[in-house]
Image (cartoon, rainbow, N blue to C red):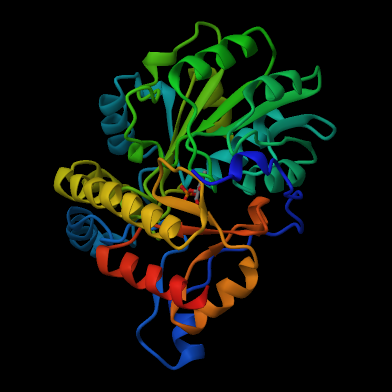
Length: 366
Ligand SMILES: Cc1ncc(COP(=O)(O)O)c(C=O)c1O
């Protein structure tokens, strides 16, 4: 698809020290004086939250004067059952961003290094630097993680290696054989490998490493991160979890604030986990929407990075100008510049009508 493969990394490192969230709907509605804004920018669930989560949260809301269960026991048990691991291998936190921070605070001291892709989720770099560590970045190759180069970048100072699979913002995936080889290569190094699967549930590929057990390399220190923000539609509640070796989970858990996962977040996540209709509807919509947006963008002459996630990155050239023009038409997308791709936009998959509106706005602007 397109020629993105050859334009290896004309993309500079992201600049600035603060994570810039996507523009909010209310903000743009205020600016335009219109109520017709759509947001396809932050990979939020286009159907909204799981209805079961809404009902469960509403049912406990009058109990919010009580502190929550600090260990999030019911949710931890349910996740342990779903992933077929012991509860000691799970840590629930205030979004996966909190887990990234906990891992860095537990394992990185000033002067230590963390290895990561140069074009990936910016929080890895920002939080490494906030912990006093040095972010060692490795260019993507053909829009994908260059795992051999990342393994080669590991030194005696490396404590943590980050891999987002699928990657954000490219949506590209690492498949089973490549992943297992990478984990094996790092097995005897004293590093923690953080596999961020924020979009893992969306991947529809037979060779995607789906379960933890599938790629278990004995003695490797791998922590898998998952979130309730995307598939389950609970980004505003803030719940994520880590699955890893018990000693690592314990070390991270000791640094977590008590009660960092609110009562509503725990109850909502537990109910969403069980909402199979909402999950299925979301996955079905994503599959067709991803195809529709990718094909539509290609038809408009854009370079499209083939994605397996709930978003797709497209090359538009003057990305900032196109982004601004889309805003004027009430469509919020994400600029990929902070992720290292200044000529690209990242488009979240929406409902069919939203995808159509995005494509016709893009067509008009281009
Ligand atoms: C790769 C990746 N990891 C983590 C997160 C953050 O997830 P959470 O909402 O659980 O903190 C995101 C959100 O955009 C993401 O893209």
